[in-house]
Amino acid sequence: MRSSIFVRSLPFGLYIALLVLEGLLPDWAPGFDVRWLYPLKAGLAALALVVLWHHYTELKSWGLSRGHLMLSLVVGVAVLALWVNLDTGWMLMGEAGVGYNPTDADGRIDWLLVAFRIAGAALVVPIMEELFWRSFLQRWVQQADFLALDPAAFTFKALLITSALFAVAHLQWFAGLLAGLAYGWLYIRTRNLWSPIVAHSATNGGLGAYVVATGHWSFW
Image (cartoon, rainbow, N blue to C red; front, top):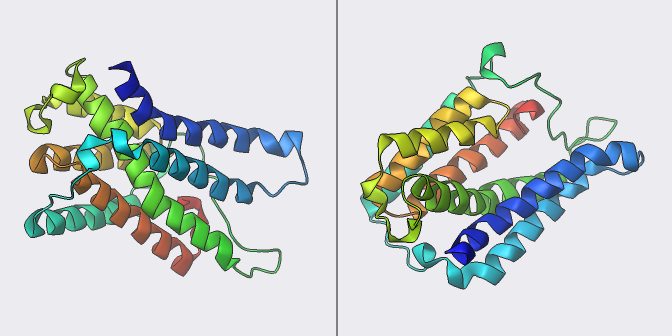
């Protein structure tokens, strides 16, 4: 059981550890461009997912019907619409920063940085986070032997607790809470982890397109 928890937590843990390092680097290495830590974060998480993939029994088959796929995409787009609108003061944990700004001093966009950011956010982060938040934590809150728990057997308490923790892991805590509830509900509704992964990917990919199109880097 401990190994099952470990393999679902390691990619997420590596990502968070490098996120902490990213916050410290400006003091340790003033001349280093911390934006290039994002490809490293996403790359290490992706490598961990590849190495540990055979442990993720819930991802070994696709199993999503056309209807569930469409439902997942609709939920992902709905979460995106909420995310870009729920950013007023009380909905934030602290002050909104400048975000991940891939432009140079002259305002030109570095498209390589953009490509790394969108690829990581849309392809790596959804798998990494859904394995941790939904496959592991949402089930574990309800039952220690979480692998034996049918996703459809969740209680509202488990869904709420996991979604609340998911919320406080994001600057936009209120949008994060609603996103956690939506992704968690999808897992319960479809009994397939690919469903919240697809929704999460649609949200993050769409957010990337929105940010680049509008220049609202703070959402990154």
